[in-house]
Structure formats: structure tokens, C-alpha cells
Image (cartoon, rainbow, N blue to C red; front, side):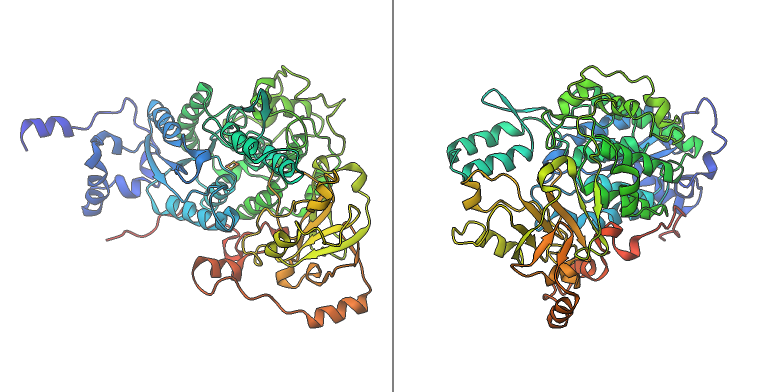
Length: 584
Ligand code: FES
């Protein structure tokens, strides 16, 4: 060895030796003097990593869902750099790695089909690598639950960093919200009240910055869930993606991840029953997406916390919605951030929040939020004068949905919440799209639209088709809402009197499959005699499977119904963080 090589490979002494450094799981790779230790370190050094990075300091993985195919996460390279700086500042060693990224707008047939696959990628990537803790970078809808589910099944110290919402969309001087504006304007086009040229013009104005949908859709809801569960730092949910404070939060998360490893503060200590109950309460308080029901149940399943549909009814359905955000209200996430964000909502919910639930910063959710200010009472209403009373997600369980279904009252038309009407049935989305424009379709505004074969197995993947378009001839007469029932999901940015997640789904032989045109339905109750239903059940044939090989076959064979979070049956639970055998 010549002098120069000696100089650049000399270890730099750490100021204080961490007594736990040799017991961390990364030491099983980097803390060895043998042949395999050489292999584990040497290849990592190829990009200029000095020897002192292998002295036992916490190794923090940065799980990155950056992809040009996931536009909502397009700024994640910048966020990852900020996390790295934070890890270095706190004396850790950051190692960034990619995982499957799920872009809501481009993936077909639906990103939900791949949520569980991405969670497997996350779980196995964390466990198989020399990581002591992990920072989860997540933004677009399914990236958040996928990363939380996968990381929870490993149960290392972990901290979530959401990408943050886009800036407010603006068209012709007016704010327009992601998704919500699309649904509204497309109905205006169908009703002949908006031109195609205007529609295309608005397309460039809706999404004008990095970040995820800026309505209280599924991405914003799940970012709020990250904060309410205690998995993110205070303020995680609402700081806009392009605001410098989002970068500060990412850097702080990097620093905190190093401390969490030293404290051995694991996900299972954060994701307790109390944390999930707080998340359900906050879901009501923000008028959040119905998709959160599926995701929270699936995440809870990974840490062994029993969470059922009934919990959403019992804990959340009677609670008020406090925020006036689209799709239920008027404002957008930038307004929510300026008004005080999620901490201001939690403070208002003092009387119902479990004040003992711990968060990643080592303090309770309550102590993080107890003094949070609110700067705009139009956006975040006081508990005593809510935006909408009793607006939490309601669970239905009539003979049409023996295993349950959900509805979002805050996004529904109050007068339709008690409704009985004649069924107009569509067997799949192809039939829906073909018939819904037909001027001869036998339908009026009192009918109940029913969509079959859009559940987890049936589509497959449970698409966001539940907010079926209003029939064209009714749109032209000014009808804006009808009761709709399906085993599908609904975009968090959508609205309407829509019964979703009917379980069991029709492709699994649930009663939804037996509904016929002309049956009378009262939300979740099918008014057909037991004898008639038995005859229809005997004649029912399952639709052909959508795949005979590959991941989609695995998914169809193992996906659980909506009431169990639509996880794969063999992924429920956790395998922990034990170090796998050596690879040579
Ligand atoms: Fe990514 Fe809406 S499309 S969050």
C-alpha cells in the first residue's frame, strides 16, 4: 500500500463509540473482519464511501418511490437528498434504495392491484439488506399504504415522509382541485354546459407543481393518516411539496431516524390500537377518503392489531367533519396548510383523541398538537361549530352486503341517505360505459345504479369505478347525484351518495351478483325474497378469472375481501427483522 492509499482509507475515529454499534443488525454485514465482511463493505465503497462509515453507526435505508411514471412523486430525489443530509448530520449512514412505485393516474387496470406487490418489495428489500432503520418516502395514493404495510412486517425503527400536496390548481382565475375538478368538469361537458376546448385548456392548469393531489383525496388522507398514526413528524400531512419547509421536514426525519435506531423505537410501538383509533377519529375530522378504511385495516393486519369495519362505525361515524376541503367542501390543501394543518384539527378533537398514543418524535400525538394554532376558521372549523356533523365513514351491513360496505356521508346528498329505488344493473364497467350514454336506458333519478364485478378478485384489483357517471339523459336534465352501489372503490377526490366496498364481492358470489334490473333496493338492503335469491344463487356462475399466471393470478387466488383490507392472505402478519443467512 502506498502512502496515498493509506491516507484515504484510514478510519476516522468517532468522537464517542456507541456501545450498541456491534449489536445492530447492520453489524452482521459491515462489522466483520472476515471474507464476507470484505465483500459487504468493498462493493459499497465503489462510489466513494470512506471506511469510517462502517464503524457501527446506524445504517438508515431511504425507501424511495421516485418514478417518472408516478408524477406525484417526481420530486422525491430532492427529498431523498435532504433525508441523507439529516442522517449524516445525526451521525448515521444513509443508503437509498428504490421500490416499486405506484402512480395512480397511469397504472392500469388500477394501482390498487399492485399495492400488495409493492408492499412485498418493501418488506423484502428492508429485511434482506444491512439496515437498522428506514425512512419511507411516499406520496401518491397507494405508495403510502404499501410502504407502511411492508415496513410494518419487518418492524424496524421507521419514519414516514410524505411528498406533500401540489399547489392549488387555477383556471381562469378560479381554484380547481385535483380529481374533484375533473369529475365536475367532465359532467359539465356531458351536460353540454362546457366545451371540449375549455376542458382541454383546464387540463394544463390543474396540476402545476410537484406533489400529490391537493384535494382531501386519498393521498392527502393517507398523509394525514401517517401523521395521526404517529408515523410522521408534526406537519407531515400538509406542507406543500414545493415549500422549503417540506425539505426541512425531510431533513429532520433523517436526523430523527438515527435517534430512533439508538432508542430502538420500532413501528410496533407506534402502531398500537390507540394509534389506529386516533387515525379513525382524524379520518372523520378531515372528511377523508373511503380508501383509508381498506388501507388502515391492511396496515393493522401487518402489526397484529385487530381492526374491523365496525371500529370505523363505532369510533368514527358519529364524529363531525371539521375541515371545509374538496371533495366534501370548498378549499384545498394549500389552504389547509396555511390554516394550521393537521395539528390544528387534532387540537380541536381534544375530547376524543387518545392522548397516550406515541409518535415517531418520542412525544404523544396530543403533546405534539395541544398548542397548535389555527389561522383560518373557515378552513378548519371549531369542534363546537363543525363543517358537517356526524360525517365519519359509515358502515352498512344489509342483506346486500353481509360482510359490510361503506359510505361517506360528508360527500353524499343528505336527502338520498334515506332512499329506496329501482335497481338499474351493470354487469361490468364495459356495460356501464356502453349503456350510461344511451338515451333509451330505462332509468330516472329515483333509480339505484348497481355495478357488479368490480371487487378485488372481479376486476381484478377493485378499481375506483364506484362513483358511476350519472346517465347522460339525467345529466342533461340537471340531475347531479343518485344512489350508486358497487363492490368497487371510489377515488378520494370524488363525491356522491355512493355505497362502496360491498362484501362479499359479486365475483366471489356475494349477493350483489344476484341483483337484477327492477329489484327494489334501499341503500344496502335488497328487497327480494329469500326463495327468489336462492334460485338466482343456484343459477349463478362465476365470471372467468382475469389471469392464469403471474402476479395477477397470485393476487386473485389470495386476495382478501374489502372488509379485511384486501391484503393477500399470506401477507397478513409480520416476519420481523432477523438477519438472513450469509450469501456466500
Ligand atoms: Fe397521485 Fe392523486 S394521482 S395523488
